Image 1 (cartoon, protein in one colour):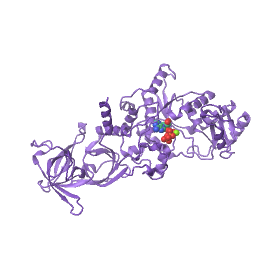
Image 2 (image 1 turned 180 degrees about the horizontal axis):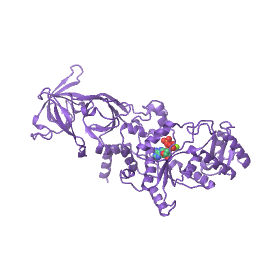
Image 3 (image 1 turned 135 degrees about the vertical axis):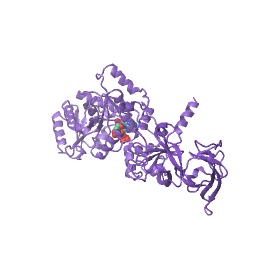
Image 4 (image 1 turned 90 degrees about the vertical axis):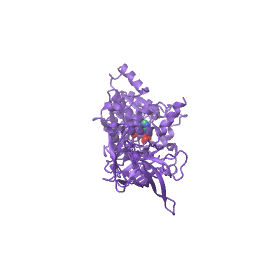
Length: 570
Ligand code: ATP
Ligand code: MG
């Protein structure tokens, strides 16, 4: 996809980050250069929150004719894996963005970071501490109480250099020594109280193998990585706001290129968790069918569910960029995919809970080909033929023996239109004597009411969908609902997910009746099942000529209703 297409997704709103960039361009701060980066830690699959950050960073680079790097912040060898790196690249690409050859890794900078550390030691701005991690924590103080200096804080430069070299060479055990920045143990900002820069870890790294016995802390690696890549605008979420003075301090002491860090509010969605740690425990606990379970808020889950890149980009744009924490209603995400699929998805007929209907006055053995419109929103998508015969299936929901008021579907003695076909009247319902279940509905049709060409002026109050019993096929349909039953599952500290998982988040229907045209669909293809919802052919369980359909979203649009209500009350 070209950048132009992406820019046309929806009108870009101005925001405080754009204002900062505009001002930097006016003052020619970086000779007009705009460079951003998306810096994931490869310790899990990306989620919809990351998608927002991707759209923001790559989107700004596109709009300002700048560049956006993809940088893996891989400083923690214990949690990172190649599988995650691969999935992250796939997801960013799928969202429609391109980093060309600018695929970087913090681990590529381990040598440079080591040199930088030596520079700080030489300046008397870093030292080797040899107390335990617990003691470091104790001496750190609290927000209201200053910290205390470690007895090793005033080691000589030579001793520090010597110990650091030995740390690097693997001569110490894990936890024996750390390298700390020498800043201010009394600073009101805890991040400035001599933060740890390096720890000893005898672990293999997914890229550097066994080369290193010491690994940089995130706070030491992150800002310097931005600087090495000459990132002009380093965008991150609000929790890093009070790390900024530390990042600025490192940059100033090292006298290297100064990126400007700008914080924005992370995306929070109700009924959703976004912490990778918690998503990983859902996967590991088999509460879901892997990272790409269609109920997961991961990009791969949303893709499998049937979300499109356009819908996610539009959602990110709609959510906007805020300076304060807020929570977005998940129905806005659902609105975005409905809006996109409404324009693009082919309409088809599928009956999820079939009930047999016999048209007693229709000729036996006759099959009629009727014309159906593929998408009323887009005439260029054309029409298709659907079969009609004496026996059809309708949805159980569309029949009531005793109809409630305003029930404009089928009930004894009542008439209804069959979509693209005829008006019928219900004459009789045949029930199982023992259970009372409906076995068959018997109707008469009115031959002169054929859609499009009928001569009758007869009108029916309702229209229902149906599938031909002669020419159809059966498929598995999976109906998804929210994974969590509580509005703020992120706030739940309970480890036992069973307490707040929605027990009805997946309903599998084995014998849905689908119109014959759906037999040869491709995994990932999307449809609107008329009157039912949007559905996507599952990429994991579908087989040739035996597709499995995931419900992307229902047709009911609660967000549009909320907006309508809001605009009425204005
Ligand atoms: P998590 O807490 O979900 O594990 P993280 O921040 O640790 O997320 P990273 O891999 O470090 O995950 O994130 C990469 C980038 O994505 C960072 O710049 C981060 O600020 C951004 N990001 C992560 N979560 C969100 C979110 N919910 N909304 C917006 N941006 C986010
Ligand atoms: Mg992180």
